Amino acid sequence: MAEKLTRWFIFGVIVSLLPFALAYLNLWASKKPAKIEDLFSRGELLLVSTAIGAAAIGELLGVKDTHALDKIIVGGCSFIAVLTQMAWYAYASDASRGLDGRYVAKFSIVFFAITLICSLACLFLAGL
Image (cartoon, rainbow, N blue to C red; front, side, top):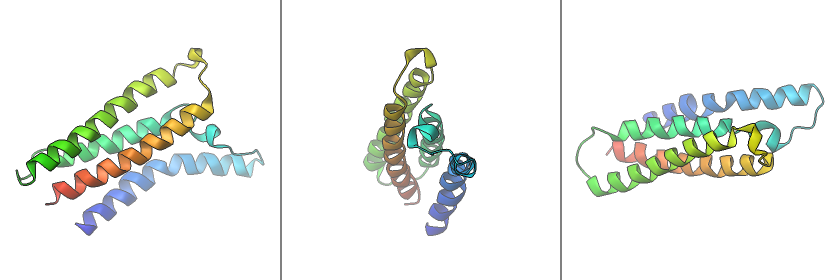
């Protein structure tokens, strides 16, 4: 179980965040102030979260029927988070709406955290 979670964290979470780290380093190297809205204001973190959440839901499907109610609850919460992020990305990525980048960035970070928690729960239950 620990190996599976470690693999997921390194190759699923960390690798998916590397483009943001590289963008931050690019801003830093060019001596531009790197603000949170510069990295997450267009909603790309929502796409990353959606992929992480969907993969975790996929791990939960088709496993043993033990803890079925727990799996339904966790899978349902993860599914709702994924759908919300997809809808929010479709809304936030439309530049004509004129959304405040700080708002989009904060929402993206909050839902990224929610997705990580739900995904961990899915992976944990999938391993039971």
